[in-house]
Image (cartoon, rainbow, N blue to C red; front, side):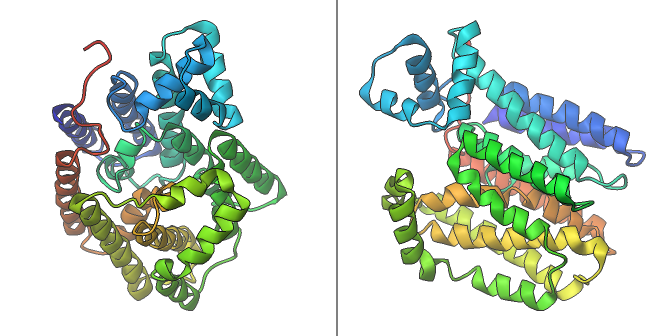
Length: 366
């Protein structure tokens, strides 16, 4: 737990130093590189016991590269997506040390996140807040250390927004489709990127449409039986997830309630105070749509753990939604201080419950 608190403290101190005299793209780039390098070190140098699925990925690497025999892990490793297996084989050519799998995947994930944050922060927006919210909110930071395949896919499809936010043309749409395909080759669930592509290529969303999306986001439990039927029938590889319920105790339930509340508040603020028809608010409205979709899948967690596989892709955008929303208010300094306190409290709560087994933390040499 201590290492994660030290990490966040260092990032906060670095943010105070870098942005003490203003914000610029150059300062944002420096902050993102240094802060995410700290995060990379914590992730890359962790022991295989840190993170729920880390040990499974380590064993899968051994099965693919050294001929280790284990019926369960052999089946798991051979059912992995092509690009993930290729990555494992590629690393295995140079070394049989599975620690390098964690190093390389951590590099892919945090470079992708760094590009996403840098490209989507304007010159007057401090990159501190997206990095800070990535660490503290929505369990994104812990998940990046155990949902390795999915997070590799996530950093590709989330950058569809990066590609399309300024201009939409044939070339950029082709690039976006390529990002979805690459994401799927890491984790098939990244096909959900077509939803991001659809939203990004729409020419504006009216307040009425946004309200309808917000209301429908609470219908998850009603449509679950139909979704389960479709997945089991047409994507049987994920059928097993629909027999597993994600809630595991009051901590998980409290986390989900807090995140639904936070997203709902953001969406209500957008509906009440933001002119969604203005071109400069187009990105904020898209972020709000993603937040609504995240509400939908978080509510579905009461029915199936599969929802978490889809929820992650949309809740990631909250790291942009909150700072872009707060910047619209005159008393934003007070609101940012409230967000800082709330996020720190949420992060401590998250760590105290184990944070998906990234607590206790151990370095690879311990």
